[in-house]
Length: 359
Image (tube, rainbow, N blue to C red; front, side, top):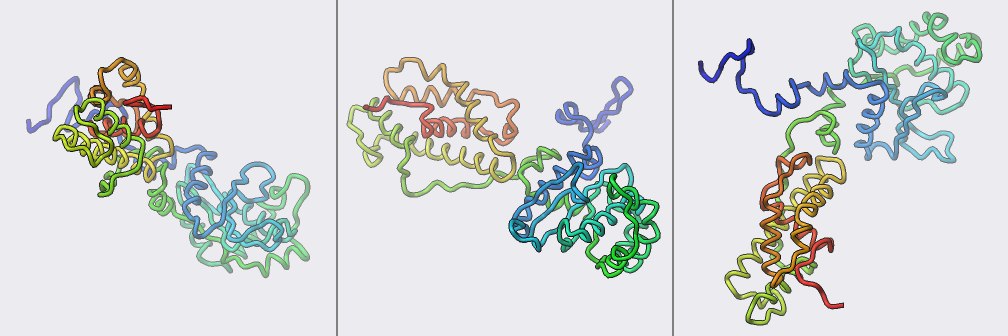
Protein backbone atom coordinates (compact mmCIF):
# COMPACT_ATOMS: atom_id res chain seq x y z
CA UNK A 1 0.00 0.00 0.00
CA UNK A 2 3.05 2.29 0.00
CA UNK A 3 2.40 3.81 3.44
CA UNK A 4 -1.26 4.44 2.70
CA UNK A 5 -3.98 2.60 4.61
CA UNK A 6 -7.72 2.78 5.04
CA UNK A 7 -9.42 3.11 8.41
CA UNK A 8 -13.06 3.93 9.18
CA UNK A 9 -13.51 5.17 5.65
CA UNK A 10 -10.62 7.68 5.75
CA UNK A 11 -7.49 7.59 3.65
CA UNK A 12 -4.42 8.31 5.79
CA UNK A 13 -1.13 9.31 4.23
CA UNK A 14 1.70 11.01 6.12
CA UNK A 15 -0.61 12.64 8.64
CA UNK A 16 1.36 14.42 11.36
CA UNK A 17 0.55 14.92 15.02
CA UNK A 18 0.34 18.67 14.35
CA UNK A 19 -2.35 18.11 11.69
CA UNK A 20 -4.35 15.99 14.13
CA UNK A 21 -4.16 18.63 16.88
CA UNK A 22 -4.57 21.74 14.74
CA UNK A 23 -6.54 20.61 11.69
CA UNK A 24 -5.84 21.37 8.05
CA UNK A 25 -3.34 24.06 7.14
CA UNK A 26 -4.82 27.50 6.51
CA UNK A 27 -2.68 29.75 4.34
CA UNK A 28 -1.83 33.27 5.57
CA UNK A 29 -3.86 34.86 2.76
CA UNK A 30 -6.92 32.87 3.85
CA UNK A 31 -6.34 33.69 7.51
CA UNK A 32 -6.65 37.37 6.63
CA UNK A 33 -10.15 36.69 5.35
CA UNK A 34 -11.09 35.05 8.66
CA UNK A 35 -10.10 38.09 10.73
CA UNK A 36 -12.73 40.40 12.15
CA UNK A 37 -12.81 43.95 10.81
CA UNK A 38 -11.30 45.21 14.07
CA UNK A 39 -8.51 42.65 14.03
CA UNK A 40 -7.78 43.50 10.40
CA UNK A 41 -7.15 47.10 11.44
CA UNK A 42 -4.92 45.99 14.30
CA UNK A 43 -3.01 43.70 11.97
CA UNK A 44 -2.55 46.49 9.43
CA UNK A 45 -1.23 48.78 12.17
CA UNK A 46 1.23 46.05 13.27
CA UNK A 47 2.44 45.81 9.68
CA UNK A 48 2.92 49.59 9.54
CA UNK A 49 4.99 49.43 12.73
CA UNK A 50 7.65 47.75 10.59
CA UNK A 51 7.95 50.89 8.48
CA UNK A 52 9.82 52.86 11.10
CA UNK A 53 12.18 54.28 8.49
CA UNK A 54 9.23 55.73 6.57
CA UNK A 55 6.92 56.89 9.37
CA UNK A 56 7.75 58.48 12.70
CA UNK A 57 4.59 56.97 14.21
CA UNK A 58 1.20 55.53 13.35
CA UNK A 59 -2.18 56.10 14.93
CA UNK A 60 -5.39 54.08 14.59
CA UNK A 61 -8.46 56.34 14.56
CA UNK A 62 -11.08 53.72 13.83
CA UNK A 63 -14.62 54.44 14.99
CA UNK A 64 -17.05 57.33 14.96
CA UNK A 65 -15.42 60.66 14.35
CA UNK A 66 -12.42 59.39 12.40
CA UNK A 67 -13.42 61.63 9.46
CA UNK A 68 -12.46 59.00 6.92
CA UNK A 69 -9.14 57.97 8.47
CA UNK A 70 -8.65 54.44 9.84
CA UNK A 71 -4.89 54.52 10.30
CA UNK A 72 -2.79 57.66 10.08
CA UNK A 73 0.90 57.15 9.30
CA UNK A 74 2.85 60.33 10.07
CA UNK A 75 5.83 61.22 7.91
CA UNK A 76 6.41 64.41 9.90
CA UNK A 77 5.45 65.42 13.42
CA UNK A 78 1.82 66.69 13.56
CA UNK A 79 2.10 68.51 16.88
CA UNK A 80 2.03 72.28 16.37
CA UNK A 81 2.33 71.67 12.64
CA UNK A 82 -0.97 72.07 10.70
CA UNK A 83 0.80 71.16 7.45
CA UNK A 84 2.24 67.85 8.61
CA UNK A 85 2.86 65.13 6.04
CA UNK A 86 1.03 61.83 6.37
CA UNK A 87 -0.28 58.77 4.57
CA UNK A 88 -3.74 57.31 5.11
CA UNK A 89 -4.49 53.57 5.27
CA UNK A 90 -8.18 52.84 4.95
CA UNK A 91 -9.00 49.31 6.11
CA UNK A 92 -11.94 47.54 4.51
CA UNK A 93 -12.89 44.00 5.50
CA UNK A 94 -15.60 42.63 3.21
CA UNK A 95 -16.44 39.16 1.93
CA UNK A 96 -15.54 40.22 -1.61
CA UNK A 97 -12.85 42.24 -3.41
CA UNK A 98 -13.45 45.97 -3.01
CA UNK A 99 -15.86 47.55 -5.44
CA UNK A 100 -16.26 51.26 -6.22
CA UNK A 101 -19.69 51.19 -4.52
CA UNK A 102 -18.02 50.08 -1.28
CA UNK A 103 -15.84 53.14 -1.04
CA UNK A 104 -17.27 56.13 -2.92
CA UNK A 105 -18.06 57.66 0.44
CA UNK A 106 -14.41 57.29 1.54
CA UNK A 107 -13.27 59.39 -1.40
CA UNK A 108 -15.97 61.89 -0.49
CA UNK A 109 -14.80 62.13 3.13
CA UNK A 110 -11.23 62.91 2.13
CA UNK A 111 -12.42 65.59 -0.27
CA UNK A 112 -14.83 67.14 2.22
CA UNK A 113 -12.68 67.07 5.37
CA UNK A 114 -9.53 68.36 3.68
CA UNK A 115 -11.69 71.06 2.06
CA UNK A 116 -12.81 71.99 5.59
CA UNK A 117 -9.13 71.97 6.71
CA UNK A 118 -9.78 69.31 9.36
CA UNK A 119 -6.47 67.78 8.34
CA UNK A 120 -4.00 68.23 5.45
CA UNK A 121 -4.29 66.26 2.21
CA UNK A 122 -2.43 62.95 2.65
CA UNK A 123 0.63 62.33 0.55
CA UNK A 124 -0.79 58.89 -0.29
CA UNK A 125 -4.12 57.24 0.49
CA UNK A 126 -4.16 53.44 0.42
CA UNK A 127 -7.06 51.02 0.59
CA UNK A 128 -6.13 47.84 2.45
CA UNK A 129 -8.51 44.88 2.14
CA UNK A 130 -7.89 41.17 2.79
CA UNK A 131 -9.82 40.25 -0.37
CA UNK A 132 -7.90 42.83 -2.40
CA UNK A 133 -9.61 45.11 -4.91
CA UNK A 134 -11.83 44.16 -7.81
CA UNK A 135 -11.25 44.86 -11.49
CA UNK A 136 -13.53 47.90 -11.68
CA UNK A 137 -11.92 49.66 -8.73
CA UNK A 138 -8.45 48.76 -9.95
CA UNK A 139 -9.16 50.45 -13.29
CA UNK A 140 -10.35 53.60 -11.53
CA UNK A 141 -7.29 53.76 -9.29
CA UNK A 142 -5.10 53.49 -12.37
CA UNK A 143 -6.82 56.46 -14.03
CA UNK A 144 -7.07 59.54 -11.79
CA UNK A 145 -9.10 61.63 -14.26
CA UNK A 146 -11.73 58.91 -14.73
CA UNK A 147 -11.89 58.39 -10.95
CA UNK A 148 -12.60 62.09 -10.49
CA UNK A 149 -15.42 62.06 -13.05
CA UNK A 150 -17.00 58.92 -11.58
CA UNK A 151 -16.90 60.32 -8.04
CA UNK A 152 -18.84 63.38 -9.19
CA UNK A 153 -21.35 61.11 -10.95
CA UNK A 154 -21.83 59.04 -7.78
CA UNK A 155 -21.70 61.86 -5.23
CA UNK A 156 -25.44 62.24 -4.65
CA UNK A 157 -26.00 58.48 -4.34
CA UNK A 158 -23.12 57.60 -2.01
CA UNK A 159 -21.68 60.78 -0.49
CA UNK A 160 -24.25 63.54 -0.03
CA UNK A 161 -25.99 61.94 2.96
CA UNK A 162 -23.27 59.63 4.20
CA UNK A 163 -20.18 61.78 4.82
CA UNK A 164 -21.72 63.14 8.01
CA UNK A 165 -25.02 62.43 9.73
CA UNK A 166 -25.58 66.07 10.67
CA UNK A 167 -26.00 67.62 7.23
CA UNK A 168 -26.21 67.04 3.52
CA UNK A 169 -22.94 67.66 1.71
CA UNK A 170 -23.94 69.09 -1.64
CA UNK A 171 -21.29 69.10 -4.35
CA UNK A 172 -21.44 72.67 -5.61
CA UNK A 173 -19.64 76.01 -5.65
CA UNK A 174 -16.31 76.04 -3.74
CA UNK A 175 -16.49 72.34 -2.83
CA UNK A 176 -17.04 71.38 -6.48
CA UNK A 177 -14.12 73.55 -7.54
CA UNK A 178 -11.98 71.96 -4.81
CA UNK A 179 -12.82 68.47 -6.08
CA UNK A 180 -12.05 69.48 -9.66
CA UNK A 181 -8.51 70.58 -8.79
CA UNK A 182 -7.88 67.79 -6.26
CA UNK A 183 -5.04 65.40 -7.15
CA UNK A 184 -6.68 61.97 -7.39
CA UNK A 185 -3.38 60.25 -8.06
CA UNK A 186 -2.86 60.01 -4.27
CA UNK A 187 -5.36 57.12 -4.16
CA UNK A 188 -3.97 53.61 -4.40
CA UNK A 189 -4.26 50.15 -2.85
CA UNK A 190 -2.01 47.67 -1.07
CA UNK A 191 -2.27 44.03 -2.12
CA UNK A 192 -2.74 41.64 0.83
CA UNK A 193 0.09 39.40 -0.44
CA UNK A 194 2.46 42.38 -0.18
CA UNK A 195 1.39 43.01 3.40
CA UNK A 196 1.90 39.34 4.33
CA UNK A 197 5.34 39.20 2.72
CA UNK A 198 6.50 42.31 4.56
CA UNK A 199 4.89 41.12 7.80
CA UNK A 200 7.01 37.96 7.85
CA UNK A 201 9.71 39.71 9.87
CA UNK A 202 7.23 40.84 12.53
CA UNK A 203 7.57 39.16 15.94
CA UNK A 204 3.89 38.20 15.83
CA UNK A 205 4.01 36.49 12.42
CA UNK A 206 4.12 32.94 13.80
CA UNK A 207 1.47 33.75 16.39
CA UNK A 208 -0.91 35.01 13.70
CA UNK A 209 -0.14 32.60 10.86
CA UNK A 210 1.55 29.58 12.42
CA UNK A 211 4.37 27.64 10.81
CA UNK A 212 7.77 26.50 12.00
CA UNK A 213 10.29 28.56 13.87
CA UNK A 214 13.19 29.77 11.72
CA UNK A 215 16.64 28.29 12.36
CA UNK A 216 17.99 29.45 15.70
CA UNK A 217 20.81 31.99 15.50
CA UNK A 218 24.32 30.83 16.29
CA UNK A 219 25.95 32.46 19.31
CA UNK A 220 29.71 31.98 19.66
CA UNK A 221 31.21 31.42 23.09
CA UNK A 222 33.48 34.40 23.89
CA UNK A 223 37.15 33.53 24.21
CA UNK A 224 37.40 35.83 27.21
CA UNK A 225 35.72 34.56 30.36
CA UNK A 226 32.76 36.75 31.29
CA UNK A 227 32.50 38.67 34.54
CA UNK A 228 29.06 37.32 35.35
CA UNK A 229 27.42 35.89 38.45
CA UNK A 230 27.00 32.40 37.02
CA UNK A 231 30.78 32.20 36.43
CA UNK A 232 31.52 33.31 39.99
CA UNK A 233 29.00 30.81 41.34
CA UNK A 234 30.55 27.96 39.33
CA UNK A 235 33.98 28.75 40.74
CA UNK A 236 32.54 28.79 44.25
CA UNK A 237 30.82 25.44 43.66
CA UNK A 238 34.05 23.81 42.48
CA UNK A 239 35.88 25.27 45.46
CA UNK A 240 33.47 23.52 47.87
CA UNK A 241 34.20 20.18 46.21
CA UNK A 242 37.92 20.43 45.53
CA UNK A 243 40.74 19.53 47.91
CA UNK A 244 42.76 22.34 46.33
CA UNK A 245 41.63 25.92 46.77
CA UNK A 246 40.08 27.45 43.62
CA UNK A 247 40.02 31.21 43.77
CA UNK A 248 39.19 32.00 40.15
CA UNK A 249 38.78 30.43 36.72
CA UNK A 250 42.55 30.28 36.21
CA UNK A 251 42.75 27.79 39.07
CA UNK A 252 40.39 25.30 37.45
CA UNK A 253 42.88 22.58 36.59
CA UNK A 254 41.01 19.38 37.44
CA UNK A 255 39.82 17.61 34.29
CA UNK A 256 36.39 17.13 35.88
CA UNK A 257 35.88 20.79 36.75
CA UNK A 258 37.46 22.07 33.54
CA UNK A 259 35.22 19.90 31.37
CA UNK A 260 32.12 20.89 33.31
CA UNK A 261 33.08 24.56 33.21
CA UNK A 262 33.39 24.46 29.42
CA UNK A 263 30.09 22.58 29.12
CA UNK A 264 28.37 25.10 31.43
CA UNK A 265 29.51 28.05 29.31
CA UNK A 266 28.43 26.24 26.17
CA UNK A 267 24.99 25.57 27.62
CA UNK A 268 24.68 29.20 28.77
CA UNK A 269 25.19 30.45 25.21
CA UNK A 270 22.97 27.76 23.75
CA UNK A 271 20.19 29.13 25.96
CA UNK A 272 21.17 32.60 24.76
CA UNK A 273 20.36 31.41 21.24
CA UNK A 274 16.79 30.75 22.39
CA UNK A 275 16.60 34.26 23.84
CA UNK A 276 17.66 35.72 20.49
CA UNK A 277 15.21 33.45 18.63
CA UNK A 278 12.45 34.83 20.86
CA UNK A 279 13.64 38.39 20.23
CA UNK A 280 13.70 37.99 16.45
CA UNK A 281 10.68 35.78 15.79
CA UNK A 282 8.21 35.77 18.69
CA UNK A 283 6.44 38.23 21.00
CA UNK A 284 8.30 39.42 24.07
CA UNK A 285 8.21 37.32 27.23
CA UNK A 286 8.31 33.81 25.80
CA UNK A 287 11.96 33.20 26.72
CA UNK A 288 11.32 34.57 30.21
CA UNK A 289 8.34 32.23 30.51
CA UNK A 290 10.58 29.31 29.51
CA UNK A 291 13.07 30.26 32.21
CA UNK A 292 10.22 30.39 34.71
CA UNK A 293 9.14 26.93 33.56
CA UNK A 294 12.64 25.59 34.29
CA UNK A 295 12.75 27.36 37.65
CA UNK A 296 9.42 25.86 38.68
CA UNK A 297 10.76 22.42 37.79
CA UNK A 298 14.01 22.67 39.77
CA UNK A 299 13.06 24.96 42.66
CA UNK A 300 12.13 22.16 45.06
CA UNK A 301 15.33 20.27 44.30
CA UNK A 302 17.39 23.44 44.73
CA UNK A 303 16.11 23.87 48.31
CA UNK A 304 17.48 20.51 49.43
CA UNK A 305 20.64 20.27 51.52
CA UNK A 306 23.74 19.33 49.53
CA UNK A 307 27.15 18.34 50.84
CA UNK A 308 28.78 20.79 48.45
CA UNK A 309 27.91 23.27 45.73
CA UNK A 310 29.24 21.19 42.84
CA UNK A 311 26.93 18.30 43.70
CA UNK A 312 24.07 20.79 43.73
CA UNK A 313 25.01 22.10 40.26
CA UNK A 314 25.08 18.59 38.81
CA UNK A 315 21.80 17.62 40.49
CA UNK A 316 19.96 20.74 39.29
CA UNK A 317 21.33 20.47 35.74
CA UNK A 318 20.19 16.84 35.63
CA UNK A 319 16.76 17.74 36.97
CA UNK A 320 16.39 20.57 34.44
CA UNK A 321 17.16 18.21 31.57
CA UNK A 322 14.14 16.06 32.49
CA UNK A 323 11.61 18.89 32.55
CA UNK A 324 9.08 18.59 29.68
CA UNK A 325 8.43 21.76 27.73
CA UNK A 326 4.83 21.34 26.63
CA UNK A 327 3.14 24.63 25.80
CA UNK A 328 5.90 27.21 25.33
CA UNK A 329 6.27 28.29 21.67
CA UNK A 330 10.01 27.61 21.94
CA UNK A 331 9.43 23.96 22.87
CA UNK A 332 10.32 22.56 19.44
CA UNK A 333 13.63 24.43 19.46
CA UNK A 334 14.52 23.69 23.09
CA UNK A 335 17.14 20.97 23.65
CA UNK A 336 18.48 19.36 26.82
CA UNK A 337 21.58 21.53 26.71
CA UNK A 338 19.34 24.63 26.59
CA UNK A 339 17.56 23.56 29.77
CA UNK A 340 20.91 23.24 31.56
CA UNK A 341 21.95 26.62 30.21
CA UNK A 342 18.73 28.16 31.49
CA UNK A 343 19.81 27.12 35.00
CA UNK A 344 22.91 29.28 34.61
CA UNK A 345 20.75 32.12 33.30
CA UNK A 346 18.66 31.74 36.46
CA UNK A 347 21.83 31.95 38.55
CA UNK A 348 22.66 35.18 36.71
CA UNK A 349 19.18 36.43 37.59
CA UNK A 350 19.79 35.49 41.26
CA UNK A 351 16.88 33.06 41.12
CA UNK A 352 19.22 30.12 41.77
CA UNK A 353 22.34 29.96 43.90
CA UNK A 354 24.92 27.17 44.05
CA UNK A 355 26.84 28.47 47.05
CA UNK A 356 25.52 31.08 49.47
CA UNK A 357 27.53 34.28 49.22
CA UNK A 358 29.04 36.12 52.17
CA UNK A 359 27.06 39.10 53.30
